[in-house]
Image (cartoon, rainbow, N blue to C red):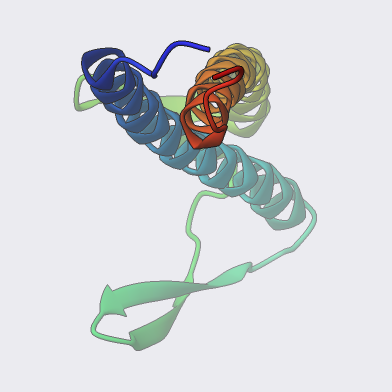
Length: 145
């Protein structure tokens, strides 16, 4: 059997590292999307719960772990960030619909990113197998003397 080419092994190891780093980046992106999706679901629940109360009170974080209780003057009017630092006032129903649409978009993004991660993992496994096979060949004693 032929000896494993060190340049090929080096190239395979490079690709293995690159794909591993890409998989980590996409995994973090997937976690961020999931966190935003959960926040949007929580916002929907909060908006819906405000609607049923006479004088709704919410906790408003001030930063640094400090929070105050605040009475919501107009629970039927919600300020929604629609992107690019643009905030619009919407009714509670419109805000819920907007957030539900955003959740649907995030779920589609999650599927796409998860698919990319699966592809990268497949490539990582294939390269790892090639590296293992190459090292296995180099460990075998030469046959026939």
